[in-house]
Structure formats: C-alpha cells, structure tokens
Length: 257
Image 1 (cartoon, rainbow, N blue to C red):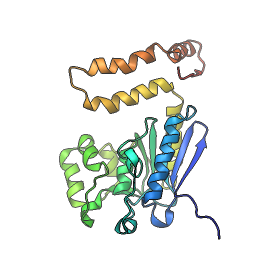
Image 2: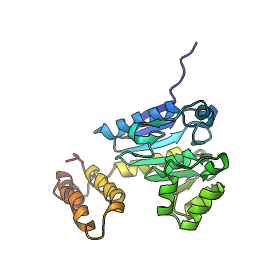
Image 3: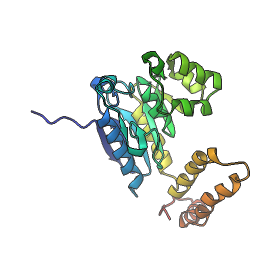
Image 4: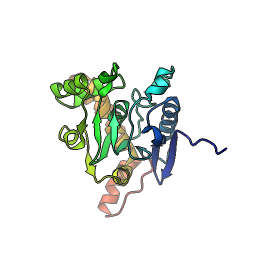
C-alpha cells in the first residue's frame, strides 16, 4: 500500500519557499494535518537564513475551500499552536508571504490569503466568507482584517450575506495585487517573490514590520517607533553595500547585516 502523501508540500526554489496545500480531492480544505503542515512550513521560512520570501498555494484547481467541515463535525479543530487556524491566521510569518490563488479561496481559505502580504489570483478566482450560510462565524481573521482594508459597508455585506465576489471586484477593493490567466498564479507569485527576495533583507524585514506593527502605534509614538526599526538598517553593512553597488552600477551582494 502506497504511503499517504503529506497534506502540505514544501519546495525551495532558490531563496523562495513554495508551500502547497496538498488535498486537491477536498479542494484543499483545512484539517489538522494541513494546519500543522503550514505552521511547520512557516517556521522553516522564518528560521532559515537563506529564504527571503514564501509563496502559499493549493494543489489542483482551487486554492482552499476553507475548513474541512466533515472533519469539524467529527471533532477536529484545525488550529496549530499560537499560529491559530490553518497554522497562519493569528501569527503570519515575519518573512514576506505571497498567496497564489486559483479557483476558490473561500471561508478559511480567503482568511489565509488575507494573512499573506501580497496576493496574486487567477481571473477565475472567487473569494468570500460564506460561514454564516453554515451557521458559523468567519473567526479566522476576516472580520478583523477586512474592515481595516475595505469600506465598512462592503466588509459588512460580505460578512452578513456570505456571498462570494469575483477577483475583478476583489482587485477593485484592493485585495489583490495582480490578476493572471487561469493556471498562472503560481508563476506570477514566484516572479513577485523573486522581486522581493532581490532586495536588502534587513530593509524588507523592517519595512514589513513598520507597516504591520504601526496599526497599533499612537500618533505620538509613530516616528520614534519607526526609527527604532529603521535606524539599524541605515547603519548596516547592507545599506553601505546598496549605496556602493548603485554608484558602481552593479547588483548588490547582501549580507543580512
């Protein structure tokens, strides 16, 4: 009897980690194995000195249909430690992560995409939080993140009706960075990941932290808190290398220090 394939696959492509939810027969619905696999992959992404970016995608024709409701009715709760549902929504990785969406990214699947930093989607993608249609609450981050990113009444409509929207509408709302032809999301996400990974790692890390963490800063402390993150970057070897490489018209060689 052939061994069962892992629920989550990882592959290093140069300095980018590709994380694939590998349950295409279930439209990549999230069970405990998926949550644990994604959590472990994000630990690898954050702990590696070689990896500069990650891509999260799904096997087959869909990104993710959300929580595995069959497993849920049998008592499974697909959470993984302090990373929460699906091993990502409560504590996303510190390293930049790009979602590559195809087909459906709904319910918990959409919430996983919202936990990523950038989103690439195929033109046939549909997104939404239909939990209320099943008597559930979109408690994987959508109700927290959507009102901060899109108009209040639109967020409320998505939450209370449970209706899905197409990727064109999602892009109009600013929830998608790039739309590509069906089947092309992963390649486009890898291109975007390579563009991120080519930059100074200290600068990328500090830039992401300012954007993420500043939501909780008061007006009186924003400049001081930003300075605490930015000043060490200006004083780094990488900053000197970036300026020197620019003057010498060559690609910089980052050291991460």
